[in-house]
Amino acid sequence: MTEFPVEIVVEASPTRCYKDEEYLKEGITVTNDISSCEVLLGVKEVPIGQLIPGKTYFFFSHTIKQQPYNRKLLWAVLEKRIRLIDYEVLKDENGNRLIAFGRFAGMVGAHNALWTFGQRTGQFKMPRMKDFHDYKEAVAFYKTHPLPNIKVVLTGTGRVATGAATVLRDMGIQEVIPEDFLEISFTYPVFTQLNCEHYVARKDGKSYQKENFYQHPSSYRSIFAPYAKVADIMVNGIFYASHAPMFFTMQEMAQPDFKVQVIADVSCDIAPDGSIPSTLKASTIAEPVFGYDPSTGRETAPYQPGCIDMMTIDNLPNEMPRDASESFGGQFLKEILPELIKGRSRVISHATIAQDGHLTSYFRYLEDYVNAHAEKAGIVA
Image (cartoon, rainbow, N blue to C red):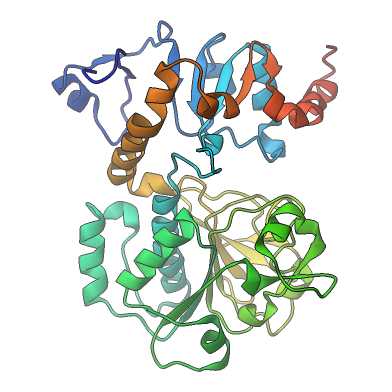
């Protein structure tokens, strides 16, 4: 790269949206052997068997909230003395994330929520987002295919929710304030966007305070129930903090007045460590929806009477791969690569989970989490 003193090498792939030929055309080396590279950039978790010892890796590890399904991955990172830098915790001095796919996840999540509802009810049909050439083509489709008078509740105010709200508006769904959403029967499609004070309240009855909720989430209870009684679709775009209340319980989902038919959980925190108890697993782009039977608490086939359809794809930006890749790459070049090159960097050090076989000081709280794998596997330190 002319702007930075680095050499770029691309691992060959027959499935990537940007083809090997496109990189070769730009004079970039494409190879099956990347073992000579010092820094390896990925997106999703790297399969344990493909981790190269002693390297620096950037990827979304999904370990910082002690996710059980990636405990073994973090243990392997430590065993292989890998320097792991997690995109999710690359932040500026004010705690704002510097790089993320959130907007695109929200955009695809909102689209898939409506697609799922159409599949479930037969009231309308639309292509999957992945089947459009680009988002402009999707918007052109929205303009010529109006929706029935459905009600959508969107949770969150960050990148994910902002992306979702963009798509809902482009679909012609009118935004209304939460109070009107609860009280008015509309003759056209509407959505409302909720922030924390709309769906949680302090257990002690004192007034909601944003900072207090962030610092003491276990001191709050859910007040989401009124929205679940009037919404057809829920799009969940919050960042879930450990010990925060779920939006609703499995028991509440089984009540006759629970009206939500489709839940698009863009956050995709697997239950019970998340805000949606019916997020039993991550679905896939190939099989985007599974059913949840509230009477049993178990997974079913999708689109069944009496069940709730769950769209929980955890790699949603892959349905807009070229748009998302271009945006993410631009963020990395602007915000992260200069920090990596200059050596001493607060941004990089605060996002480094593991180095030289040890958890860094910022992530020592993960010791019990990762040691649980060693104990289960009978590994003696």
